Length: 430
Image (cartoon, rainbow, N blue to C red; front, side):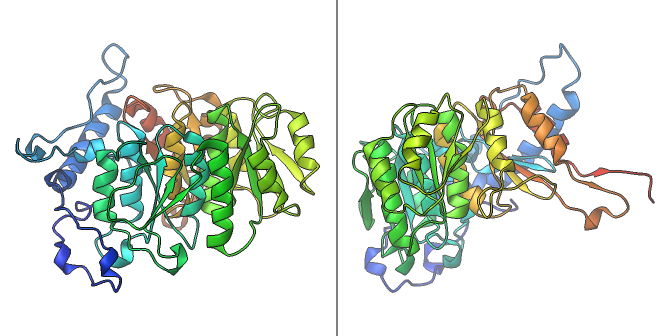
C-alpha cells in the first residue's frame, strides 16, 4: 500500500449519488488512518529484522510487537480511534505475503473490506456490506456467500447491542449506497447483528446459526437470480472444519448450510428440498458429520460427495486441492493466491472471505499454531511452490494473505510461509 486508505480525499470530492437521501453522514477520516504509510515502512523494517535475526540469540525468535504510531493519538475530547495496525489494515508484508494484522475478527474484517474496496472513488465502493453477529460464527460463515458477484458485500463484524469501532470506521469509509444487485439494500444484517442508524438494512435469519444459514441461502437465490450450482454442508459443532467453506462460498456463490454430527437439522433439510437436483458437498470427516447424515442428505439430493481431512489443517487442504467438475478450487500447481488463518478463530474465515473473491482469488488454509507451521500445510505449500528455469519474469507466482496479529500467527511463521511461496530457480539453465 503506497498511501493511506481513503486518506486526504475530502467527502466533497466524491461523485454525487442519485439516491443521496439514503447516504449516511460521513465522519471525517480518522487521523489514525493517515499513519498507514509510515506504519507500512516500520512494519517492513520489523519483519525484515525478524527474519534476519530469527536464527540468533536464544532461539526463541524476536518478541518485537507490531509498531504503534504515537502521533496518531486523538485529542482527549475526541472519540478514541484505533491505529491502522489495530484496525487490521494490510501493512505487515514480505515479498510474497501480506498480513491483515488486527487483534480481533472485527478489525480483520475491516482491514479486508478496505483492502478489497479502497473506496477512494465511488467505483471502488461496495454497494452493500454484510453485518454478522460476533457470537454467531455459523451465520458469519454462511453470510460469506453474499460476497459473490454480483452482490459483492464484504463481511463486517457487529454485535447484538452495538457496532464495534473498527466496523463503524470501515462503514464510514466504504459508504455503501445500495443498487439494483442488492435491491437497494446497503447492509444485510445477519441474526442479531446491530446496524448503525441511517443505513437501508435488510435483516436475515433472526434466529442465527443454522436458521440464519438457511435464510441466507434463500436470499442468495433471490439476489443471484436462480438456484446454486452446488451446495456445501458444513459441521455445525466443529467450526474449524467449517471455516474453509467461507472462502469457497465467496468465490463461487455456493451457499453454506450446516449439519450436526448425527442429525440433519430441519432448516437445512428444508433448504436442500428447494434444490433436489443440486449436487451437495459435505465438508469435514465422519467425526464431524457422520455417514448417516450423508444418507439423510442423499434421500433429498440426487448427488452427495464428501470432501474431508482428518484434522482442520488437512481438511482445508483437501478442499483447496479438490476438483469435481466445476466444484472445488483445484489448486494443485503454482500461480495462485492463498489465505492463511488460525483454525481456532472461525470468525476470521468470514472476515477474510472477500480476499477469496477478488485480487488473487485463493482458498483458505489453516494453521493450528501461532509459531509452528503444520507439517501438512508446509508440505502443501512446498508442493505448489513456484519455480522458473530461465526467465523469472515469465513465471507463475504465489501470494499469501496472513490473517491476524502476531498472537495469532507469529512473524517467524509468516517468514516461513514467505519462503515457501518464493519463486525458486530450478535446473541449470541460463
